[in-house]
Image (cartoon, rainbow, N blue to C red):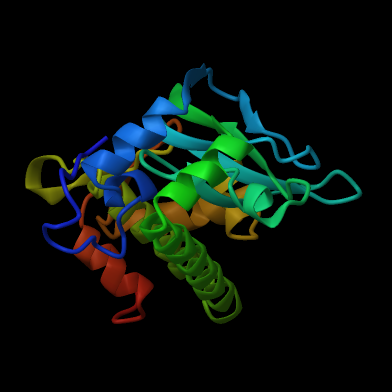
Length: 241
């Protein structure tokens, strides 16, 4: 994960992941109370409905957040990547977990027992603001995507999602030749459809439109954003295809 040696330097970017926003002293203290863990693709980091006995900081790899309804229908809610704090809201709210977090690829992480994490926060009160900021940013993101679901159709709705994923991936140094950004999380068309509340067929048609416009290139569970600025402009409604 990218490192920042001290919070005395430039202020953290609002888009920074939790770990990236910690200073060196805080990282050392959190690592000291954590256990390193590895998760194979599709392995759960935590289960919906379980008791909240730990939090996780992802060091490398990607995971999806999935919620299941009473009838067993699963919906992708979010994707988390390097530096992100996961499984934390239930710990801090002292309630059962509201979603499952599942590895999309090989994930390396730090697992911190709940009591040790709250003790860490008490010993480093400034980190509470980082956790609060994470909550607020995720609520804002969820609200923005909900609005997009109402106001945008097929290609533009997918463009909003892919533009966000490209920005997440670019922060991990994923930009390639000519500014192209390979999307880090290896999401299937079914998973993208679940996230944007659309069928796999709708996703396939939307990808074809974006591909024909030269905005993306696709492969099996791989999407490369060829023109990040153009994709964001289309997502924001600056032009139509």
